[in-house]
Image (tube, rainbow, N blue to C red):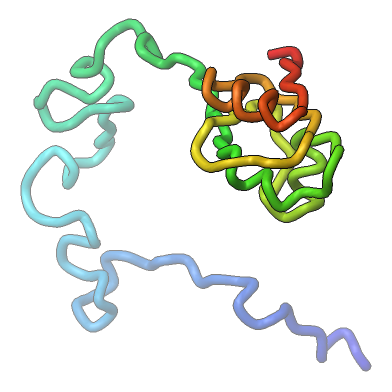
Length: 149
């Protein structure tokens, strides 16, 4: 291999746009600037955010940004009926629910609701229990324990 055989990788180098070199080039006559107006003049520059005289976006929006943005907690809801298939006396928390295929991933926002029936004693750890869920778990001989929010 010789120095004369070296070439850059294809597509890594671009030719610069040569404007004003005749109509056949595709960049002749107005030289890609369009017809009359501010954009065609030499030294043309518009300030950031300029929209041709229309009130710019940054002035149309309210001054206090993210004013209404509140950190909302996405609760993961599990009904008592889904716990009926778990082994007797199991300790149920988010990690155990993932292992048994009831949840897809571990969460710190687990909410147990009372739809369905449970007939086995379970110790359930969650961040929230509905009243009916708590009653059904305790009626089956289990415990409903709140964990830290």
